[in-house]
Image (tube, rainbow, N blue to C red; front, side, top):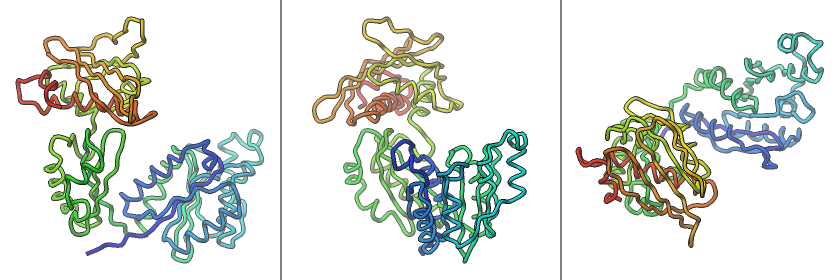
Amino acid sequence: MALTAPTALLLSIGSELLLGETVDTNAAWLGRELALLGLDLRGVHQLPDDREVIATAFAAGLAEHDLVLATGGLGPTHDDLTREGLADALGEELFEDEGLAEALRDRFGRAARMPVSNLRQAQLIASATALDNPIGSAPGWWVERDGGSVALMPGVPAEMQLMWLAQVAPRLQAKLGLRPLAVRTVKTFGVGESAIAERLGDLLEAPGESVDAGIYARDDGVHLRFSTRLDPASLEDPVRRAISALADNVYGTDAETLPGLALAAVRRAGVGSLASLESGTDGALLAILAAHQAAEGEARYRGGALLVDGERPQVPAAADAVLTVRLAAQGALGRSRVTVDLAAPGIGFEARVLRIHGSGQQRLRRAAFAALDLVRRVGTTKEGQGLSQLTSGQ
């Protein structure tokens, strides 16, 4: 039985988005949140700071969708026109809300310190309820009209996320009685999308009743996504089948990551802490490991350094083992060689040469992830074989 979810449209407002000056990270974040909440995001439109364009987009979105979200354009300057655009689309007049104006004056230490232009942020329309912004000066709006809903949120990611979690998502859940999307992910490394699709047979096209399947490439490998709005247990079978078909290329599922699995693998081999050295990667390995949230049962990451030709490497102190990654210049057909070595007292590990594809920042990160995938295979060797078995396992 198919279950139809309410639909949503996201308007990302700001000419800086269209000029490439700002990356719209809000859209990716909200896309995940909407799916998990149970809404079907049908489109993301980036709009300039143009009142007429914004008004037209709101009117069209409300005519087709249950929810229209907008981020950006709630500031105090002349080009912040989201409020005006929605007011025009709904045929309502803007007015200054006394309570919002007083809150703004309080925030700025009363009127003497507040630019007059900030009072634009105290404007409302009759059908709007103000959404509090505890970490910024721009209130959001919640609007319900003719069966549809609109939420206006700031463009600053931290402000938007807090407003969404504390005020917008709870309103949507209460109004629409949403059924969350259940998602399972199978993560692979070392094989491309087309090869994976071939090995999976008809699993991607027919994963099960009311189950959707997707496949997408990322820097840390190719991920398979299975989702449903019905019984989460229906995802167990396609996940099992995918893991069985892809065997050793699967490194984890769901929240498992290559940094976490690699650090856990070396910890099981008796390594309590790890440092890194790298060249040709612009510090990609250091950045990935430093961003990883440490968990129990993992070796502790002590930090890393970059290898510079002609200079003696400065290894971070107090580390039991050092992981070294050297990325060579890109060769023919977009391939690059990555040399990986792991030095730890009492553990044998022969340096390995891997080959990766990619360009730009993707190439650098893939080199780091390739090294981590090699190291995480420590955990797949039989007990007692140790790290040295990695040299013959790829």
